[in-house]
Length: 311
Ligand SMILES: [Zn+2]
Ligand SMILES: [Zn+2]
View (spheres, rainbow, N blue to C red):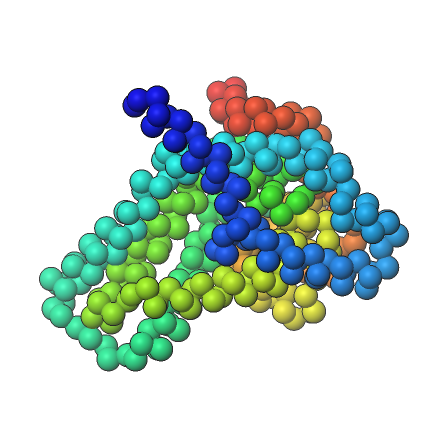
């Protein structure tokens, strides 16, 4: 690789996380940050918070403290993983989809189920969202239950204060696993729909998925990683994970361990008996408890899993 190409690569890696703030398909897009701020304002006034406005929203220890600095470090490091390892892998989702479609055509012959474009968009959206959410629940559950995987997932849980950027605090090994999971699931479902709809799965089909993502991000997804106790009314928390329910997942209290694994849907936690609803919980502290000091720097978070596994 010549020198100029290396400079380009470094610039691309540095730029990538900065573009998140102006990309509507990213959760930390400035508009979603703003709507999350409005929801946080609502919570602040409704719960009659004792801390001052400035401290509640702009606390220096929260945004620039040790935990946040580790988050930022991992965002940039993972950007390197995305550019070098994950971007070239994306094409495999397409290969999987085409492979599945071809397999179905050779095995069962050409087929067209006769759905309208609208039906395809709706069914494809529901299938992608529900199946993807289910497998992300399963993988997350395994991350907690299998000691080898837990060592890597711990990095997400070692955050002692949460900001919207904590969602990117993932060990590169977990990042790769999550992306591979996502592209296999999307590849398979897209392949099946390509077959059923006789190739009419196009850009249009993804609009439904994008609309649901937009709604999820617009209505406060950023508050999942925050101290803002946004709860949903009673029954809804059996269906959708509220921001506060995800905060419970980050609690260092023993009784909260291994609960609320759900990504967006709470139905899996409900079904497997791992759901905790907001009204049963008051105050939370985040992190790994006694182990926090072993994860108080970027390098420790990056290396600890390997060190612990070698022990
Ligand atoms: Zn977890
Ligand atoms: Zn989290």
